[in-house]
Length: 252
Image 1 (cartoon, rainbow, N blue to C red):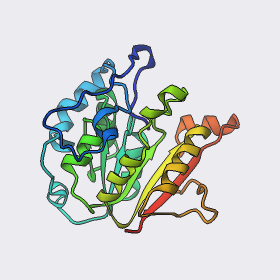
Image 2 (cartoon, rainbow, N blue to C red; image 1 turned 90 degrees about the horizontal axis):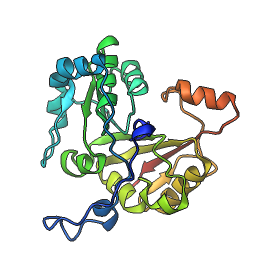
Image 3 (cartoon, helix red, strand yellow; image 1 turned 45 degrees about the horizontal axis):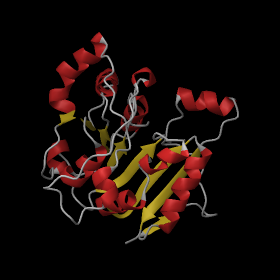
Image 4 (cartoon, rainbow, N blue to C red; image 1 turned 135 degrees about the vertical axis):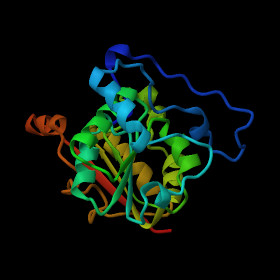
């Protein structure tokens, strides 16, 4: 799901100003443009309770140094990272269906994190850890290079107005940062229900060095079984709305 929250509390995100401590080598897009709007949504009592009870064991704090991910999970296993998991229901379902794998979710909105923690506890999922922080900073500072088998980005904010397209998270600098975090042979899996954004994603990914499109026709792939069909998506499909999945493999 996208890194977004209650639309009734929307405010336009402002570009970050350059930090004097920021490396001059860091791509301009990653330094300046926010791809999400941080809104303060109200926590339900259940979400607050889940944060208090389960964050100490399932939460990962942002830090300016790399995590030892094998130590985090207490084992060596294939690792999936999802950017912007929304309320987390699909992420928990995937983690439950694949206990032989480990999952990391990143979300900026506290209600979604609380909901995901509660769902994970209800489903007795133990192979899941969560960050409540900006995904670009987590990936840059906390996730070792060549450590991930899969990166998932499902239904990110499409920023459908043309003047806001620069805020779309799928940009050339961003996908190259993700490539560094994937193992050779690892897969970046994207999905969107906005056709214009699907076209944008495909254009960016086809031009990106070091990736190979897994689609036979070099376009889109059918939804894989491991990506759950959400209620929202299922309703859209019944109404004739399209959904586009893209899967790109790191080759170098």
